[in-house]
Image (cartoon, rainbow, N blue to C red; front, side, top):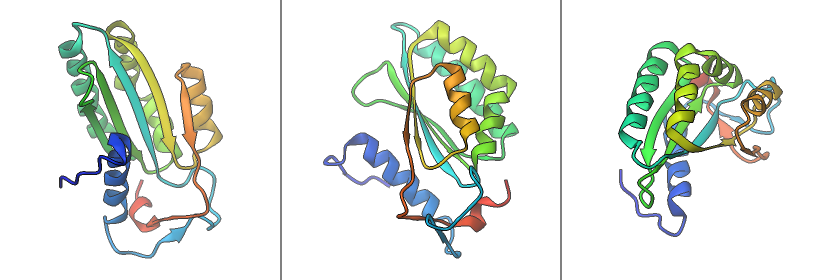
Length: 170
């Protein structure tokens, strides 16, 4: 759908769309965030912002497509994986990823096609930052720190819920 949310900006529009997707998957019982759960057992959103070097966009789109196809086939814990173009900067792109839990991210990081993508990224791009929305395990934070990628982590408050039934399979 196409809703004009200019007053929220593009970031908020993307997050609104993702949250709507997650929360409308089904109408099952939901656990509120004040519900005690095992650390890292909840789903979360990761936004990776990429800036491609001048003249390298087509090559970058090729490696993005390659890793996207591999992730789809090999990572059932990756619930949503999308590569979007910035409307204002032809060299800026955003990976939007929804993980079923923290272990799904650890598996993503260890996935050989993802590791190959990261190597190729450094040849074709000059920017990479990560934002996480939701609570994650310490191992996720340690993994991102090891990568040396700037991270901004938006931790979950006591407000909100997760439809846990939708995320138990992975």
